[in-house]
Length: 94
Picture: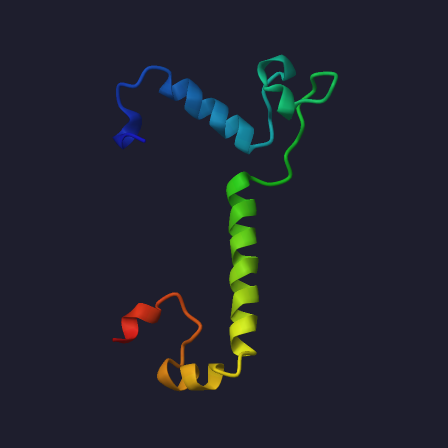
């Protein structure tokens, strides 16, 4: 990342290609890695971005951890100390 991408050769082309990809248009199959193409070298359409999948997974893990904590016999005591528990801001109660 650079501020404004000023003076970076190829920036406009890269920006245009990124916008095309975001709209669902892909590169020619022969320009893609083999892992992103079929045997006929046709582009594989990925259902979601890696970042979105990671965020979804992390949310599921947090939700499961919250349920485990709420079911713990120690939860009522913790809840008296920190009514917002479980929270990622547990260090702020000092």
